[in-house]
Amino acid sequence: MKKAAILLADGFEEIEGLTVVDMLRRASIYVDTISITEDYMVHGAHGINVQTEDLFEEVDFTEFDMIVLPGGMPGTTNLNEHAGVKRVVRDFAESGKYTAAICAAPSILGGLGLLKGRRAACYPSVEAKLSGAVITRVPVVQDGNIITSRGMGTAIDFALKLVEVLTDKAKAEELAESIVYG
Image 1 (cartoon, rainbow, N blue to C red):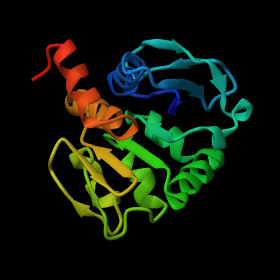
Image 2 (cartoon, helix red, strand yellow):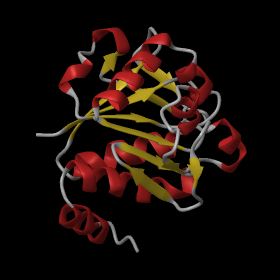
Image 3 (cartoon, one colour):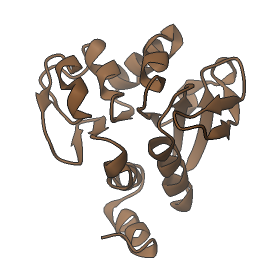
């Protein structure tokens, strides 16, 4: 079974984070919600509190096939200020494991130099932070093992792309049909 780790920081965009969790679980992909704070309860950007399964320090990230970074503010800033998050993201990207980010979170990948020469999408106001990236304005883009998306309005497209890369296109299409998407 494929496994995805979604990192949640106080101020994360709830729709971006929870849509991914929901859709991957519907596709029978193991998803671990991981708090980067010292508390299992993470506070979303719009007042929705989420109980995570694990704390960052409790997780063996080598067990995962994908890492997912939801955007939102100040969630993206909080993810970016966490040294462990940046270490794990760099490890995933450089080892060829799937590294996914949506909205403002691709700026973390840009700041780490992981997007140089790659196609990427993000929230319009953070495009300048995607150092060296070829900016695309499509809902979701995959360039090798890096998957990025523009924002809350593209969360389902993003989640379906993650399902596709962890399973196959047929499973993603079946899931889209089951939720009456598109």
